[in-house]
Structure formats: structure tokens, C-alpha cells
Length: 281
Figure 1 (cartoon, rainbow, N blue to C red):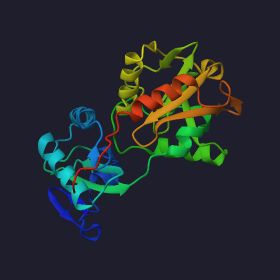
Figure 2: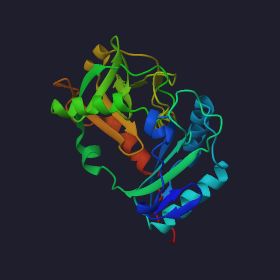
Figure 3: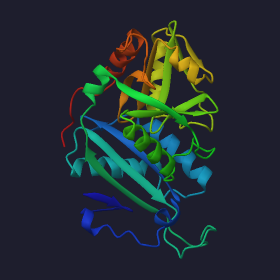
Figure 4: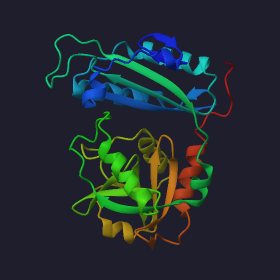
């Protein structure tokens, strides 16, 4: 079942208009919610980010956060989703193609569930990455539908035989194609500050909180590609990939070439936050 506006219906019945501005211009916002054991993980963080994206793009939310959450919980129940994601997007609405905001257009909400297991293999063994210029726009803090640069970056990594790309602006590292990025050097955790150059990741926030609880020093300051090459550990964080070690960058081994001690400690602490029992559906 899909959620369209406030109605639940089969995918084949979802009436997306060809004049939807999300289709024409990528004029919309979205969120991806992780579901563990039938429960949305860190919903408050996702809804705060959704509200910010809506406010800054001047897209009206079609209902209150309470109503949105209730609909997503019902969508999870109807789909009997235990492990996976809920994808939700809101576009500015349908109107004849013209760049200015339409004076009369109703925002369009669509959401669906997708089963997805935890990425246990990559969490345990790590992945390889390459570096690439970050040529995206300067409002990466907004979670909009304009993802073609991210898509092209990810495909570039796959074409080069790597799993992910680490983006940088003139040598200063920002994030990955669809995740945040962190390194560890001499016991200190480093990550780019949460400004307009990166997406303010929900898992990123959780991991930084866990690091402080574990007395791991944290520096939210810019660092360079050279710093990455000299790092003891590196990992990415995201809703779907959790805390995934990066063991090689541009063909160069990071640290020992295996997930580092601090990365593993953060993985273990993160796993403790995952709901342990499924609610009745």
C-alpha cells in the first residue's frame, strides 16, 4: 500500500500528475525513515529536518507533524513492515510548467514502505571509497529532490570499482554521495560542521551524541583529503547504512585496513539503540 495525500491505496492507483512540479523541476522535499522491528527510528529528528526543508523551500506541509506521523505508522501497519524504510516526499504540487511558484497549487504527499535488512556485511567488513569534487549547489542542508549530482557521484564510484565517493570542495571534505563522513585521528573524531555544505544527518547526530557519551573527543571542523589519507579510521553514517567503516580511499588503505576500535565501539553503541522487540501489527 502507498500513502497519497491522506489516503491509502495500491501503487497502481497513485494518481501522480504529469504536471507535478516534482517531475518538472525536482521542486519537492523528502525524508527516509528507518524502521526497526516495526518502529520508526529517531522520528523527531526526521520531522525537525522535514520542517526546516519545508520552511526554507517555502513548501507547505499538507498536514501537521502529528497527522503525518500517524499516517506513516498506519502505512507501516498496513504493509506489515518489520525491517526497512519509509520513503516520503512532498512536492509543491501540480501546475502548468512555469518557473515561478504557482499561485494556486496543493502540495502533493506520497509515501511508501520498502523492506530492507540491516547492512551487516558492510558494517563488519567495511567498504572502499574514492574522492571527487563536490559540485553540488550550496544548500546541501535541505533534503530536496534535486539529487542528480549525488546520483552521478555514486555511479562514478561504482564505475571505478569503489562502493562510495567522498566529496570535497577544493580539498576540504564535505560528505559522501548519500551519507555523512567522519574520520578518527589519534582518538579524536572529526567531521564537517553541520552548515549549508552538508546534509544534517539524523544518524550523524546520533553518532556524535554517542561519541560524547563514550568520552570520545569530537571536533566538528573542516578537514582535508590529505587528513583522510592520514587517518587512523574512517566511516560513514546514514539512515540506511548506519555506521559503515571505510577501509580504503583512492586505493590507499586507511589505518590497518579493518574497522577501527572507535568505529566498532560506536557501532556497538548504535546497535543498542535499535528496538529489540516488534510491536503487534
